[in-house]
Amino acid sequence: MNYIEHAAAVVESCIPVELRPTSRAVELYRLYALLMLTKQDDVTLGDIHDAWSTWMTAVDSSHKSLRPFDSLSESVQRQDGPFLHAVRAAARIWMTELAEDNLSDVPDGEPSAAGRSPV
Image (cartoon, rainbow, N blue to C red; front, side, top):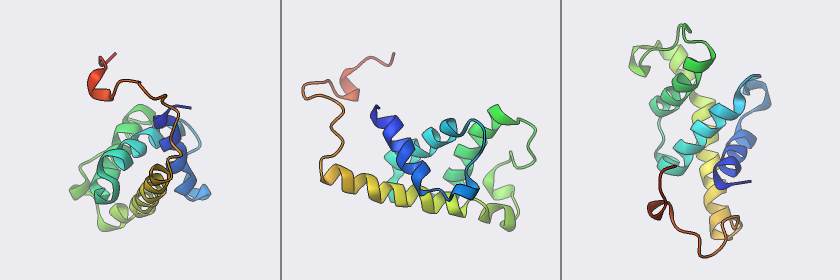
């Protein structure tokens, strides 16, 4: 398992079971993992909605909530709340794992992301 897959699994573990999508879920968890890795505790409801919108575009491009976050009603905006809490909780778990050095899938001597080609 690479670090993105691991991060997505951590995010998934923080989402209440009853709120998890039934199809193409891994794609959504990867997007939430990207937010977790890049924004950590600074992730916002708007960020969560943008990630969901990116995912939903592939699932159902005519979904009524595929609009900018600020144009949604407050009740629809609040639906992103549990996912915001999940991504923030996952970030705390992730940082704890890093501190404990449990993320050792990449062998020592591997080039950093900056040193690799984008392919």
